Length: 524
Image (cartoon, rainbow, N blue to C red; front, side, top):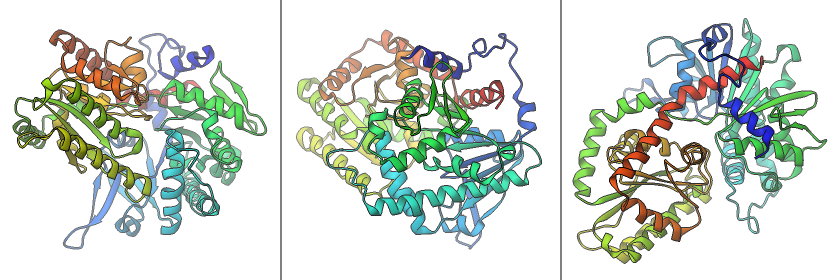
């Protein structure tokens, strides 16, 4: 790793000494937040509206840890959350104030209602699959992608148009604000917002812009897949941010190297300070590994609904050992190779026949995109082949549980003996952090080198937490499944405790706090 980038990585983790604050003299952020207006922008918002049976408009908050952490910020300062309308009820509602789940304050929610064709081009052609596949290194480059005139139309009339609409909505909030504004942009859907926003506002009125990217950032060679016009526009816009956050130090380093190799005219890259300079502006690049709400998850894991699902699953599993995976049905999750490794395990170790069950809790993802729906078909076929080959009238080796049911997923995590997390590439993969927190069996985590969590849960722990797997190596994955199932209880307990303490030490609020403290320290 570049030594300068390693320095930047230590700073991004908010070590108080590396940031120039004596230990024990943490700066209070409440004053910082109270003096600012906050605008959060993401493709999906914190709430989704619907119409009930009586025709009344109702809404529900998202359940994810990210939504809950960001909503916590809304209690500290005036906050507007701008997002794409997902339902007709979202479109009808438009904008307004929503009471926070805590009962302490409000958040102003505004939906950007793009033309349906423009939104489809933005989301289903450019963001997914083009950018998502590129950043997860998933394209079979000799065959795909084919960037034709339809792709360019989707870029110009969809992705650029929706990003411009977000920028216009944010600019309106900045103009109406009585004081300075902090804008927090989320992820790859909104790469162009910063550039449009700076075009819309005078330099002295521009807010502080923090853009966090939740998915991996590959090296410059892979970014050459995109034509110059697309990638240059993306890199220019991201470089116009004040602070760019990535999941891992490797992602941040890859971004700097991409800018150094591909931007024209050349960008000014300073690896020692972790900055990219372009067009008279410098953006800081830092690592902020996202995490989970540990206390909230533990409370939820004890809920009556989770307990009910756990009892049902215990009855179904009986005295068998449980190998578990919990994933969205995305090609990067590497589901098929996981089933192939299990097939090898049963072939090589017949002592596991009828003694182990592999439960895959799968959430269908982006099925409107052809590549995703095709992959789900492959997953179903692969699991079916294992069952046909090894199953008996009393034992189904693989059990697929398909559907979005978070309580059921948490119940399954409480019971695993082995948790398989083997993505080819992943932003973080929070399942690798949720599992050790709620598991009751000292379960063993098998973690891919391609997961963002690998840096925290394997490398920084010196291999004392998870077991490391190469995502494409089916044979070795099979051998590690055997090692995990046969591991002595003392080692299982020690590894599980190490993982649990690592996750407890850096939860979702630390992730958020670290970003805000970095803004303060850099005086952005």
